[in-house]
Image 1 (cartoon, rainbow, N blue to C red):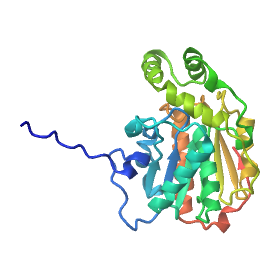
Image 2 (spheres, rainbow, N blue to C red):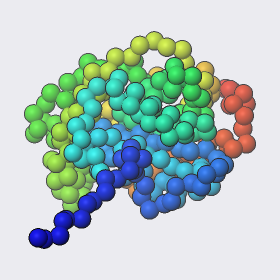
Image 3 (cartoon, rainbow, N blue to C red):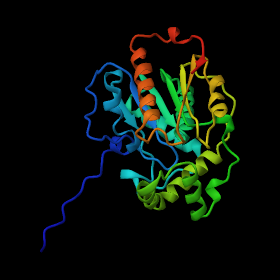
Image 4 (cartoon, rainbow, N blue to C red):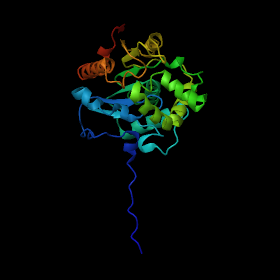
Length: 283
């Protein structure tokens, strides 16, 4: 009789929702704010794989959310509506006990999810994020009533190319081949965004920093500025040169994004919540 095939252990649940990319988890009791990052539509947690190194001592850790349908969760069905997705992410954050000293960052769809998860945690009586960073995203009440998720595959690919997802030259060919495999996930994520309906709630208490890009066809400066009433704390908007995916291109816009994040997160270590309620401005 041939020996039984070795069993392959399933990855731990934490690795499914929050995969790590070479950096060890923070030691128990480590001081400092944890930055929790949410991906854009069709994106993966790997977008944030090098952020821990860039942010350095400004954070205790960077944890990126991995949604179903990608990475180690490739065989899982992606979510197609916001409500169950938000509830499950909030459940996981509470289960892991990381809702004490944390900040949220989200780009595009990720900004919408970060906001909704912050609201869900508040509804449960959990501490809110100490800071909310939103990037490349129109304000929540401006979501919905779009139909990109209904496009045929060729049309959806053209849509992705039109917002800068493919890049230029040889990189466009590489990204295009990758995108073709990811179209079902992108379509599902766009259904989450296009089916979303904002419901009025009181503003969040935490300060908010928003990033808009000069050539972003998804969220222009005015649509990003529309986040301002969503916080009772301070609101700061940075405007950078770039397209919708400026955070993935290694250039001045990404460098400025990381620099501003590092500065704001470093200030959290020395600033109380009451001191964060100050004037709002844009530059």
